Image (cartoon, rainbow, N blue to C red):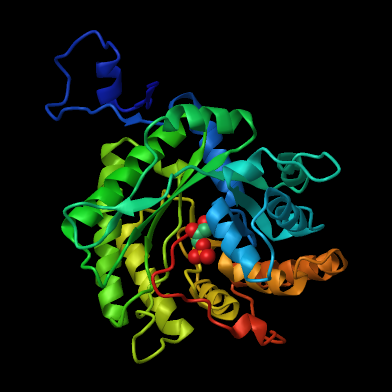
Length: 387
Ligand code: 13P
């Protein structure tokens, strides 16, 4: 693996780089800083900055074929390649999307697909200044020795897959693992989640892809918000411990956390203000300001909740860009409007722009919530949801 050696300009550095005498050397040992980013370091930093640009966030449409099938089934469509392509074409050819969307996470099938007119989806994105991203994990499987928890597969062959995805135009990657509060979480599950994310992040950077680091803390459970805060702090401290241990370049990553909310079955709902307060407390305690962007997942919140909560987090300045990387909270009303009918495509694209714009305003802290449809208010939480 190529290593970057940071240039040190202190007296300690000139000593290290062959100063004539060791007599003036400090007694303290100078340490060479190594990053996993290799020759891509500058590019990673600029990719991450472009995704984390003001008033923009990520459209997550990286559902595996099985999960995309669930989306299509919700409007009575079969899970065929033609239908998946038609749906992704609707989303990715929405004119004006680039004003609100800086990156789109794709599933492998989509990265290699084109519109029915033969234009690659990657080119559709590039034309709107939207970075193409790629889901690189291979999904969750049971974690033996844990309390019915899971771990995320996909490290085998990851370097060569990332290199191929880069050639195809991808510039960032996503790896989603989950942590369950009702199951514990056990120390084993948290460590495995954190270690897997860190190994993935180093490999992605080494191949030119900005890694989105996503330990999703599931909404499932009847616990209160304080318990979520406690678990989130634990998870993120381990994630950053292992990211550092793997020499990951923090300026070249993006985070995709869950918001700190009460469990979905908790007796009381929390206000956007309480969610923002707890989430920002957790982030300030755990996330260095070197990280350029925090791109939240929606996790089963309604479209409206996800937007209001994001807005509440942007009412005062943050050390990082605080934005969205929503799947369900950007797609729900689009799907309902489309219904698989060609005559509804235009209206469905308008519905996507409505949500994208609302979240763009929320990124800037200027969303008011006026004029939202009833559809946008419907929650999408499903117990034990698998992605
Ligand atoms: P949701 O916004 O539906 O939780 O999806 C998040 C995700 O990980 C997709 O990339």
